[in-house]
Image 1: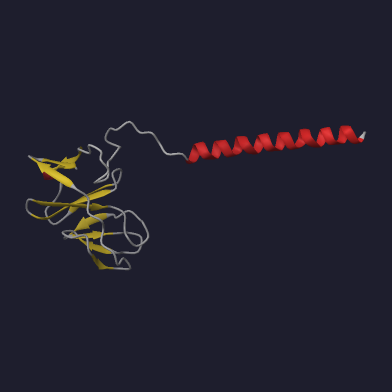
Image 2 (image 1 turned 180 degrees about the vertical axis):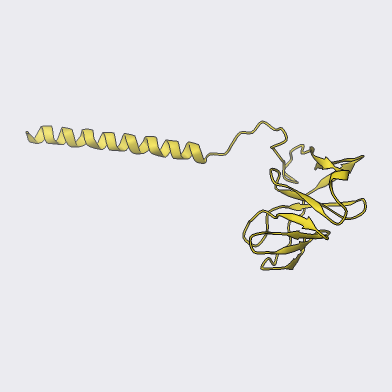
Length: 148
């Protein structure tokens, strides 16, 4: 094979390798890109994000007094520390980001490392978590609880 043919073969190989690498990078970027959800119950606006929010989470009767319900899809936990008083917090534990599991006797519990939080304030009451759960805005109208 002549020197010119060797250079051409080398350039063709480089072109193929670069093309394959570019296609792989494009696929990875597409897979890592954000979703373009069109609203609906799955889409939840964060407070202060400028969105309309208004996703109905539950009926007031669904939230037990002294307890609460974790809404995993919306990453929010709604509590009723005392009769008629409803609070909402992020359902993501401030220790290492696990989802909180349940609310019993006015205590929100994270199953990963047993951090506990006050159901009225979101403040840590035990375990390794030292930061409170961030509050989430909700509104209660009639018997419906909606994410604000």
